[in-house]
Image (tube, rainbow, N blue to C red; front, side, top):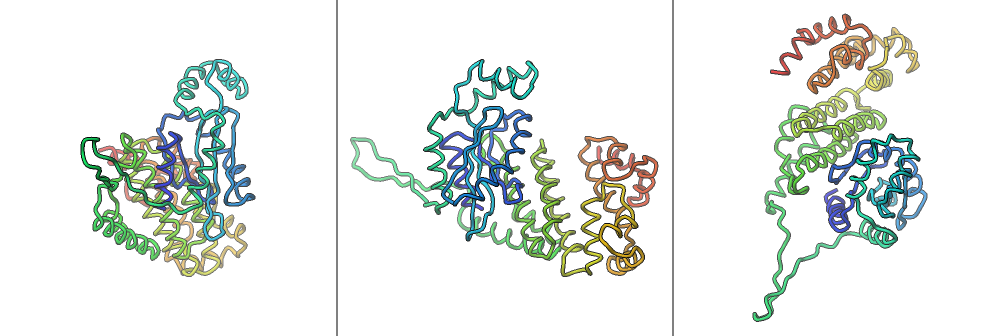
Length: 401
């Protein structure tokens, strides 16, 4: 991951192009950007991932894909492989192959059915993008060669002034961490991932503090983006550790996707800090409660169904029907293995999600209740007080203090 990240920075700095890496499930692992892109383009780009993935998966590892969308924004993509297996996609862009003109912008507005009010924002954004013309072919070739081959650590050499005796001056790159600090960090990271794998939340939380460092230097002038990149990497590592702990892929995919979206949507460093701890909590809970080796087939299926569908109007009967087991048998086995009834577990899951939404401070109590699966405001408030020992209103007041 570190080598891939360093290659991403080389490409970003060399060609002044934003870069992104998504895994085989199209979850963001790395995103290095100047954060000046209007939201409309971010949403549009998500739709192209599937087409690009299909193209690079069907090609050999020395190929690169060129894609231009309806906004005339272009991208270069290279498939990432490890031991012959497809692992993800590197994407460089957006960039332009045409000069920015009034005609270009009017065509974009017309093709995408946009209001005239978009003219100025699009013009400003397009003029901030690199114009590559036909050189994108050479750049695609260089990026492909860089990504499919190991990076060679180079040294930066300068020469002395002409009136001085020649003496090469080797200047090693300064990472702001000496070798001993790097070693300690990776040892702490290894310990942290081990605790995630075991589902040991308490020790994982302690280890998280030990191995999380300051990497703002990786994105000079944009510490929020640096922290987002680190959060994406943590999400990926946590998911892999939980998979080693025995959690089934489809459940991990749901967790990973949820946190990837929340990381990208975060607008403060404090939000990202909160998400880091929430990720540890949820991945450890997944290992503790949903690991294949920890429960019978009926309970495992019920847990996965609840955690993927708790926002829907589900109950014991519907869950039993969906997973193909007798209702009474399901209720008995769940209580036996989880030491809590299935319905109580469902309420706890919903209320814990409600607490997270309340901490974000962006939704009303009514909207939060609806979002976590309660159609009745009064019923949501009743269950919230039973689970948390205080009313939803009092909890929000406490959060705001």
